[in-house]
Image (tube, rainbow, N blue to C red; front, side, top):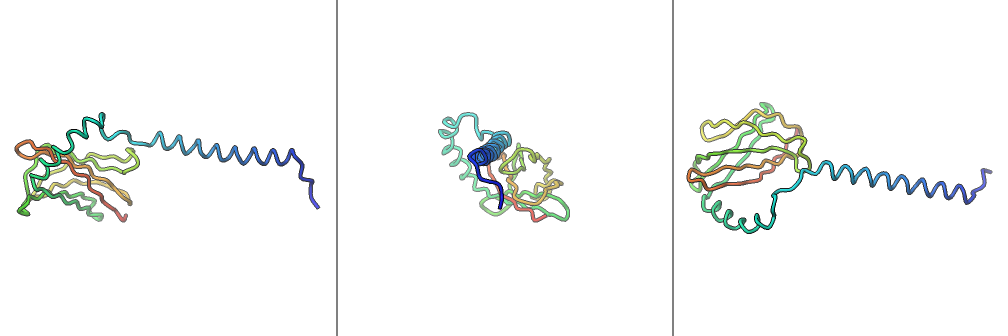
Amino acid sequence: MGSELTGRKVLIFTVSAFAVVVGVNLTLAYQAVHTFPGLEVANSYVASQEFNTHLHEQQALGWTTSIDYDEAERVLALRFEGADGKPVEVRDLDVLVGRATSVRDDKRPAMLYYNGTFSSPLDLGPGFWTIRVTAASEDGTPFRQRLQLHVDG
């Protein structure tokens, strides 16, 4: 019929199976550690103490943001509106576009203002993108927003 199943063959099969499992786990652990983008803040305790103050200041601005991406033209557009629905002036605008899981695709587009909209040419691949917006009002009140964008591709 076939060769006889011996203790040696069972041992080789068992050790080989465990070696594959351990090898895959080590590979996945290595990838998880080396592709993690890092910490959000340097000191989470200090950030937590300041969070509510910044939140109330930002809410008092009454701003809303919207993001659009024109896939045909490859242009990212960002709008800030006040409580009255009109465009607001912002200063110190910083936009970081990237994936939630990796910093490899992070981009900081140079946003140009025209007619109530900040825009920049930007080539984004398909999938989900996270847009982190940091700005300040005319009086220096900080504004931070994290927006999600899906590109069909």
